[in-house]
Figure (cartoon, helix red, strand yellow):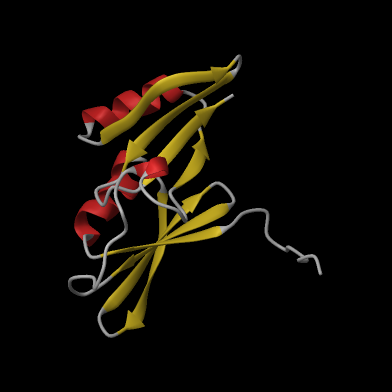
Length: 133
């Protein structure tokens, strides 16, 4: 059975106990448009950010998480390790992230002619790939 996909994007959920820093990173450093919040019960709050046709759902826990994801980006563990945002000016985007204090895990790198990437860490250590090409 194939999925009958009705939206040209995905919704991605990132769970954090570090709401203030994560909201600043996605809303200010990356400049994603905040499109709303949703109270999920038990003190958990979802902040939603538009990213092209996709939505980033930042789920903020009211306290400490019972476990955290393994650090180290792509080579740190299996499972979801990064997601990609395609940008028009990768050099400027990375410079703005660095100026805002974000860790640049992989500097601007040409993978092949016309395809350039960089990896930036959010405050929880999740990797965001920036891609131009």
